Image (cartoon, rainbow, N blue to C red; front, side, top):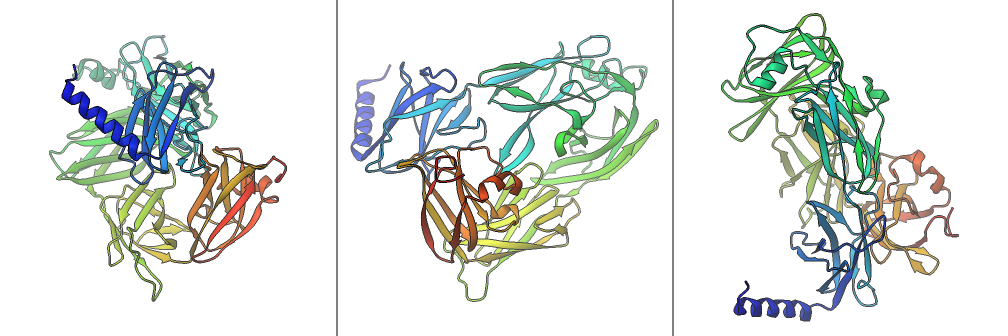
Length: 527
């Protein structure tokens, strides 16, 4: 029970916050489908410039919440079962949303936060006899638009239990794919998985053929499960055996250190699918269906990452692979500035963005322009540098293959990157209008006038006052339009072509800060 002194301190602190605040952010949290108010939901608020400075309240029985705050830009979120959703998020699970702009003349005290209920996907995996398959590896992938690009990315992994059952949840609504691999219980690997010991006799050398929803062995024919808000979807699988190849993997280096050995095959829409994954201290043998695999081994020793990989075609009865673990090379580089251009006073960052899944790695640029990625996983990357008033106009990779604006880094790569910085940047802000009313939560697209690298395309979901703000835009000619499609693939020229004819031509000059008021497409002022 709270003591009187503690209560007095709490009341004084609350009163102080209310007195210091000149605005109020308040409203109601409702279910996105039914519109019913949601009680006892955790609501969080943080200033955009200090996102770690969170405050929270719980909605009351009528779903209402309130914060007394100072004028400014804020991020408003709800959290249920550990999953957060931003205010204004209209495509579940994307993390997009609207900032709340609080200030004079702005109504932020009557917000409606539409919360998407979380769902789940589950099912059962059986063998050719209808018996449950234990320890089958189930991969859950999600189809989504990230940074204006359509992607299929791995969302979660799960192992089936002794009943062959798996379950993913809680999950945001969306389109999902499933891939399943495993090994029969009566094989050597299967017995080891069940009883934790090697059998005295080698059972039949067979493996299960990987399956994709809806029960196809061809990843190009995989279908999506559409999960609605709060929905429950089920996907069962029946795995069939096939004669297997004995794949023996020998890892050299880091003796005595545990390694993670992965067998990777081509998955759904360019993703990686794992046939097997096992921690080992020595050699390991897998029984796998014939096919093409990437064998990868990774380890960490003394806070240093090591890896090795080799593509193989597993054919016939036996295939052997020898991997030599090497330290993952650091990727160093320098940001080069034009002559006479001062270095930025604010922090400058270099980002390496993976082509396959959009994962971003960042590192700080030092005063002399140098930077270092101590351990960058092998893959294909786009590289960019940003600071207030600065951006990169491209890069060159030395010691690694580069095609256009993408560099291919391997385990053996000792690449050095030269990133070219520019102050030929401007700013563009404004409002999206439907008649005389500013529109929140719609997509504003700033596209180069001529087709260009996808990094030149920018998207912005308007904030609570209908505003948008593009900062650090490369000087040049652009087309600007707004559309009520938050999931628009705006880096795809064909996807946005229907809007370009009616888009507004914009010229952004170095050091300029333009302001525009543009109509929402389909409201009479645009196509």
